[in-house]
Length: 91
Image (cartoon, rainbow, N blue to C red; front, side):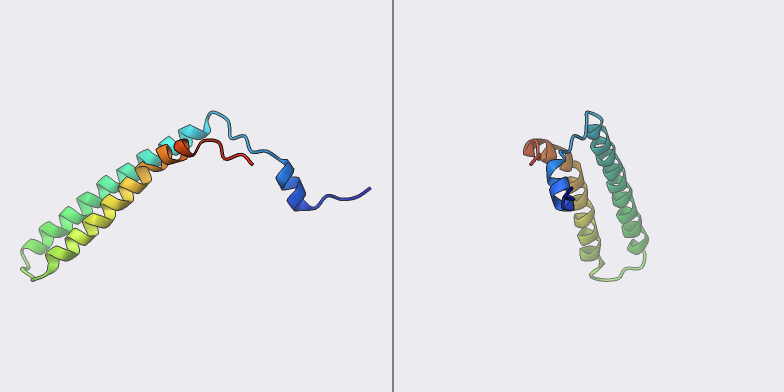
């Protein structure tokens, strides 16, 4: 009796996530959106706290932080539709 190579066993197995796999992706998108709202609130709070100190050039730092928060939120919220657009990734 010959033993199969592990790669051959993995190649022969098909991945079938089932209908509940989309629920997890939706939950992750909602959590990422909540984290994005928290990030915007944090950046806004830091902007309000720095307003009184009057340090020059701090506006660019705040807008850079706001840009990264928004970019991460858009990327996380579009992950679900991107995966759905790719369709079945079965080999």
